[in-house]
Length: 375
Image: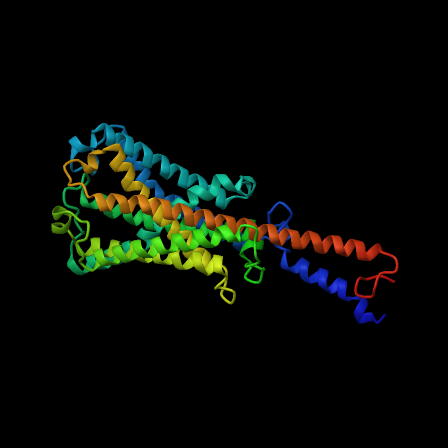
């Protein structure tokens, strides 16, 4: 038995330890591997996001308290449905601030993942659109010398500017804080070199679901892209008359999110991203599916709740169907992504436990081979 043969198990164990050295058994980062600059970055991102969320929350509290700051249509804002929507959106803002704090501080690592991931997923989808749209709208406003106006909107133009800029800042801070948090809690899942595309027990279910969801997402994306370039399929005469460049831009952004979700889920499930960092298709799927779900659900809430925002507007059956499909497709892709992440982490843990068990057995097994570490 040569010295090189006896050291192989040790080398293998050292490599395995380095691959997971940032993650403890419960998913937390050990104190020795938690650099100060990472803590500072998490604090800056988290509290920056909270600062961006405060103006929106302040406006909602003023309106719920009977104030009229920034209101253009007082009768509409006093409607019971609008009060309910304001309460709902204020609650959403508070939830967003709560999960930001969880991503920022060490105690957030102890919160169950199922309490954090669903609202973060929906928030990513809601806010990603503003991250893209707001800078383009700002450039357009600077070029034209005036703020974009919303015909018949319930609030004054400056409110849209303040709120949408806040949404963009909240989205950037929230996603950055989440990424830093995930690097601490789920570093093993995000490792680019981790085995990610092993055949799983649910692969036969994942593949047809992913294919169907991706085809529907592509179809929805093509439809929104058509609307962005002037198509009128399914739109009412009123909606066609009030189309704007910024409205077409929103359609284009929606199309990009849908196509990204389709491409991302196919890359993940079919293993087409073996040479690419896993974070790339994961981000495409996470944000794209979240956008499909969230921006499909919000119009449906207004339709089913018969809120004041839609009163007097012509109903568009195809558009309502599109929103319903967006919810279903986004939810399907989101669940598929969750299955892949869970199996990816389980596979990594099984490999680690197996290596540790083999190491213990080979260390004490009499008569083992040189490769097993026996004597």
